[in-house]
Length: 562
Image 1 (cartoon, rainbow, N blue to C red):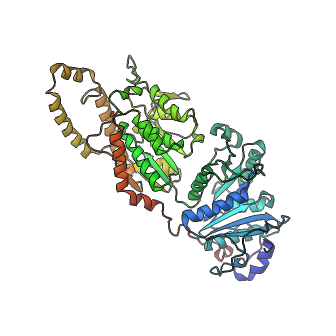
Image 2 (tube, helix red, strand yellow):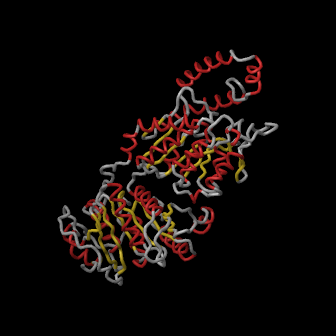
Image 3 (cartoon, rainbow, N blue to C red):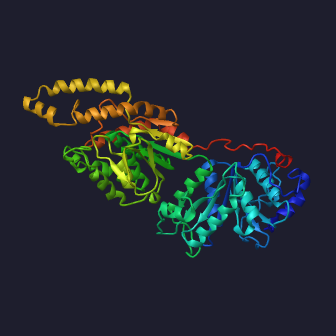
């Protein structure tokens, strides 16, 4: 295997090819970052970053079907890379300048080694080299060794759309992360440069809370790699958890993440169980979940790592006429609500315990509303069960929840279908599941009520009296009035959110009632049916997007020919 070339050697060989026209060490002007370049740096010798990033390159190619190159930037004094690397690729590469230096990692995945010397003009040539690679590959992964020095590190970060730091939970790793971020503060004011921390967790390691991490490094963890290969653990096999996280990371880099937005809707939200069943059966992986009210509850179960079979079993725990009392804890006097909501939280905690958001297998966003300011609150840190309890606190029905000194109520007030929450998080493709009825469905439901009332009038007078006077859930009674008024404010917001989603599922029908918690089978079957009807659209979301990168011509001559 050839010895890795230094930037000096590359520059000497290709100075006359148009790749570079200057040896000035001034910063290149024009476009700053390249859409298909991602930079990685490790902050701990415990992390087996070469193996991790090689596996990431293969996973990225599988997710996008685009040619991928992994560039490893080494210091000049570094030894020659491992001799057991695959042979060089000998096929022509459409005028790629460094064709003779490429190694083949796998089909469509290549590697290039590069040594840096700290010479004048190096940063400018490195910038041109990255631009050149970006023109010939769909994805460029730049693994820059910290020992390469401050100049190469900052230049590789400056030119990348995504810049990640692989960190461990110890003081040395946290300290290096802070140091590297301090380097980036000097790069410019037009764009804020920063590293996204990727926490590498060994087997059975639990992450610190986001609040604790933020206090130590000034930011929260961007992504978790669970069961990550660690240097002091020999002969480690890659686990399902590690590969699951790696695939999600690859989809982020490849701009093909899928998000699932679950609306409010009371018992009609059992339909989400059927939706999740079909997604799992079809192998459609979801990278982030945003839920409101019942959507937050079901979303939390799936985000915690429970599969659809487990969630289905928990839903059926409520099947039957009297099972509803499992989640009802009446409050007397009903000064702030008729139901306390603590039983619902307790039932959720039987499945997820006191899990924090950082413990979730899938990233989760829970929507609630600040009762006093009516502002939207997106929970993504702290205890999950408390956030879900706040999200399901239907105004006038369930007692509001106090968290960190603020009082919260049902998120459906402000965002009944949190599509925008996923967009703001950078999710590229969104599945919206909406159980908020349309006005047409409400008209059909009204006709159903007339039929039901006619049937009710045939009952004995004392049953009719009891139903009318003491069943607060009966049509026309207080809880029904509150919920109908609530739905009226949700309809336009939910419909607007649907227009911003890529695929919209509507598992609702005219005879659905928000308080039918003892009929989960009915709604689960409806969720399955509607999802199966849209399965082709859902599968299309997983297909790679063609030409996701486009090289833009910078202002100066150097980068124009790069």
